[in-house]
Length: 80
Image (cartoon, rainbow, N blue to C red; front, side, top):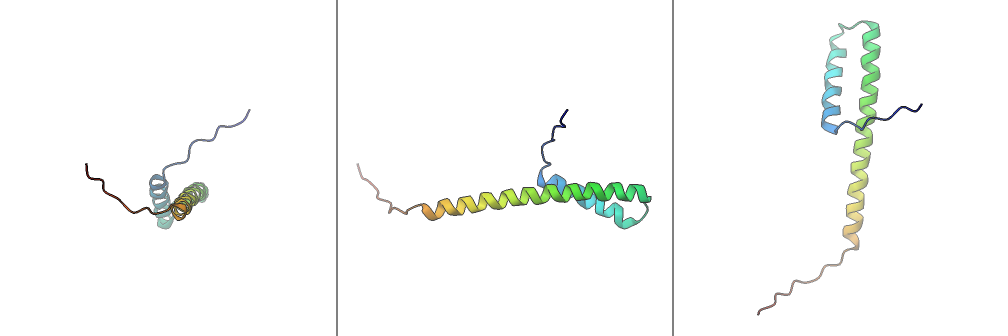
């Protein structure tokens, strides 16, 4: 049986969760097992953010490519 992938978290949500995890890790009050668990979650969140940023960058490149191919045409106002 194959596991279904859940949709990626919105960038802002993933970043907020990552910041929360970093704060918990910086406090140094977690057990080794909890620290490793939080670290693993953080790695997943970082990957999520990287993928989201990569996709956004690709969209920006596509828009810029389309813009370069557009021709500007002077506006001509018609009077009825």
